[in-house]
Each structure stands twice: as C-alpha cells, then as structure tokens.
Amino acid sequence: MSDAIEGAIEVLLKELGEDPSRNGLEKTPARVAAAMKHFTKGYDQDPLVILNNAMFPVDYNEMVIVRDIDFFSLCEHHMVPFFGRVHVGYIPDGNVVGLSKIPRLVEMFARRLQVQERLTMQIAESLENVLAPKGVGVVVEAKHLCMMMRGVEKQNSYAMTSSLRGVFEEDSKTRSEFMGLLEHRRDSFA
Image (cartoon, rainbow, N blue to C red; front, top):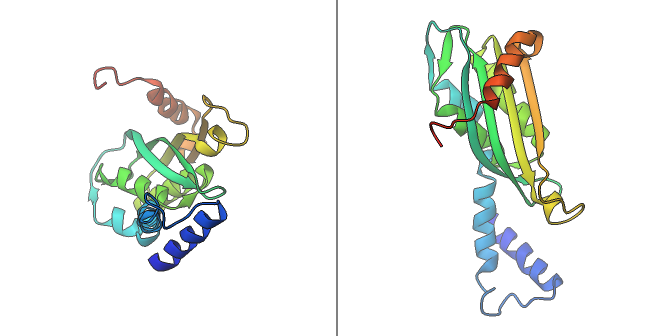
C-alpha cells in the first residue's frame, strides 16, 4: 500500500506543476505515505480490545468525566486536519473503565478519515456498547482547516457536537450537571 500512496503523491506533485525529483521533494512521496499511515492508524484498532482489557467492577454510581482530550483527525471531505478537544462522561452501572482507555478510544476513532459528527457518535456508542453504563455523554469542540484555509476562510470559528445516551439524554438534571461540569475551568491544573 505504501508504494501505491507514494506513486499517487508523485502524480499529484506532477499535476501541481512540481518536479518530484527536485531537491526537497525527492523524499516527499515516502514521507507523505508514512504520515498518512500514521494519521489513519485507527483503522487497525478495535474498540473492544481497547476497552475490554481495562474494565473493573466498582460500586460507584456517580459521574466520571475525562475532559480536554486533545485530538487531531483528517476531514474525509478534503483530507485536511481538524483538531480540538473531546470531553467524555459516563455514569457506571457496576463497571468502570481505566481512565487512560478513554483517550485511547478517542485517538483510535480520530485516526481515521472522519467527520466530527461521526467521531462524536462513535466514541459514545463504543462506551455504551462495551461498558453498558447508565449513560454516556460526549462533547467535541474542533477547528476545521477546511473552514479556515479554504471555503469561508473563517479563522475563529469552531464546531461543537454532542452525543448523549441513556440518563444523559433522558434526565435533564444529569445532562445539565454534565454540561455544567464542562464549563468549569481547570484553573488549578492550568
């Protein structure tokens, strides 16, 4: 696959009016192929493997939140980056998941060609299916280079998406608590 990507990049460089053999570009096709493999490594990962190996029975029924999870992804429409932060909350129902597994799950789905809406839903769906909590809430805020570098060229806009499941969707108090906790700034950790 790497050879095919390298060949495609050589063709792209030629179509752009460049000489792929000139100094500075001669190793670009190999570099782009390696970068694309890294940017899309999430296709080779399984959420079940990431989450199942780190579930623990715990008698805890309050909200667990992991917030400000940085991510980078590639927009499937233009293959340019979008990036931001993911905030994940859930209420356990007998099991918790190791806290480091939530950022790993975010990373796995972000390292695919994506749209922000699907990324948000996939994170929530995976936690809901594997952990079977009382509820899950996921909020993603991101800047999209396809909006910043082309098209409308708006530098300060960002998109927010959410996926609320179980009690996060059904109970307005739980939803308000989750959203309120996301508003609190981490001044003591900054």
